[in-house]
Image 1 (cartoon, rainbow, N blue to C red):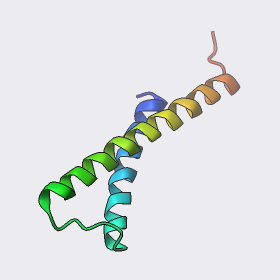
Image 2 (spheres, helix red, strand yellow; image 1 turned 180 degrees about the vertical axis):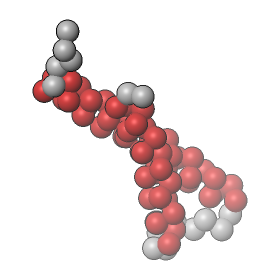
Image 3 (cartoon, rainbow, N blue to C red; image 1 turned 90 degrees about the vertical axis):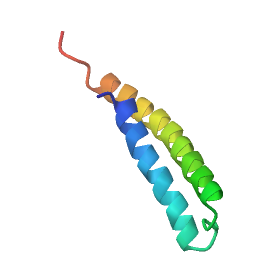
Amino acid sequence: MSAASHGAAAGVVLGLVAVLLAQQLAYLDLTSLTAAIEYLVIGAVIGGLLGTVIGWALGKRYLRLHPPNV
């Protein structure tokens, strides 16, 4: 797996956790099933996108600092 895919997977999980934490802190109301699914999907997508970008950038930086042996 690449750094971007690792970042995406971690970002999805963190996005879901952020939505659930916001619900626990009374920032979101997840009593309606439709709204709850929408919030969870949006959180997962945004977290996945942010995680992908961060993982990609860190992967590029790692390869620049540690070039593969040829």
